[in-house]
Image (cartoon, rainbow, N blue to C red; front, side, top):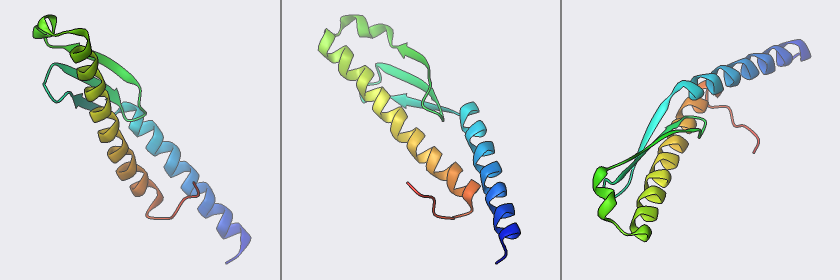
Length: 99
């Protein structure tokens, strides 16, 4: 394989990854708490866009509210991780990337 061809492939990969990152920034994930008291809206780049609390949360104690928010955040992050894996896998066409 000649160097010019290798450089062209590297540039194409770089362009694909940049486009995938931009795409992820526009994608939304909703994380839900286990008890349904909290919803976290997050982008595919882990930016939290909004936090929605169920009005019934007023009757919960602080520990339960904190647990609900944390649960929703963990759900959103897990879904974002899966989304990122899928989008980046498509962008890199299965090529292994260094970690």
